[in-house]
Image 1 (cartoon, chains in turn purple, orange):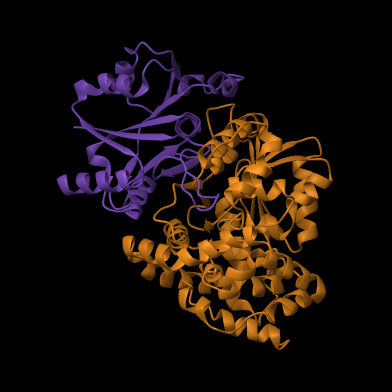
Image 2 (spheres, helix red, strand yellow):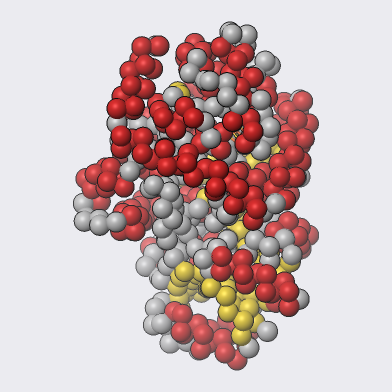
Length: 178
Length: 377
Ligand code: SF4
């Protein structure tokens, strides 16, 4: 397990993401550190984590509850931080995998400037194919999308110079709870 | 036609700025590709595997399309199998409607049928959201390269092209990208149709798989009410694992350490009134099935490394081609475009064989071009 964690950390950082391995009690402190006073939208979090997040001072947008609201897109257009759970991680490629039913995880992962993905150490698999295998076997119902994220958004379209961010987040933080 | 091609090539030979980009890109190609293969050595084996899978699927393409249709179609999801570019364009216009605002991410098949020009001609407001494609759109041109469409555009030129649209001072590439992000955000949020391409389709799960670096693909495929996926018959794989492998091989051979995003679309969302209600998959043939003599072309996964390794491409960039450019672009042009244009293009090939060396699918590209030169196709 330790090796996988180490490998995941290295790949994620190579991809331009930030890795955090912390004790559960430190979660709120870390999120405050990353998010500052900005508004936060979130989707697909465990209930216990959600309860923790409610302690934050930021304005919160619980997307899974708001998913049927009209003008949702307008409401969240300027929210700068998105938090999601994570369905699997791949060590070799530094990928995080999100299984999305209502697309709210996608909104939280792609619209904001900062994406924070909270994960469980047990969900790290050696390779991307293992991770996909795991999620496909465990999906209940019809997931409308599966998103594989391997770093913050970038473009190399002008003279092949890599620039971050492009249309997606400029920061990707993966928080692993011990 | 020959003289028109001549003129274009002479023009690009004289334009140092135009050539700088492609020259640099071709110079770096070897280093980049080797670096990425070293980082993901299994990609070499995966390339062989997916070639075998493609061979099987292409033995009976109609059957493969039907098996994909069976697993794909369902609530809100429609597959349209279309034989010609004309049919595809008309149907897409029908789905889009003249009044729409469309955000589009990169699709080479979309280029193949000149979709942007067509829809804009019908009054549709369309925005290319991939930065390279957006630059190409602004100069009303055509992509020079499969993976980096604006490979021939320098920073200076890009700034000139962007300025009239974003109207902000842009000191460097970072600020250009940022201004485009701001400009495009409104379009993403207000568009009613999103058009995307697909890198691979998986029969076992009925999934559409595509890759982007910018995140524009994610926004294009999740925000609008209607999604149109433009793809072609050679992208069907038996399993989702194969489809993902195809995406990874394409990225690695394009010389990238990784692709930022791999998106897998399975259907319209549940429990929400936001996001897409309909997904239309346009499965284009455009002469692929009928063309037997150049069939090997269909194994191509469009990584673009044959283009970047081509000594002619490094001199004349995207002017050597017609929609599809350089190396494998010549047989692609012969199949999906105009045969006589392809023949004119073929004469520029030196038969040096570098493209064959770098191709993950081990396609005999010089052999295909020779057939075209000789008119045996
Ligand atoms: S022919 Fe081969 S090298 Fe050229 S784009 Fe296709 S897969 Fe890549």
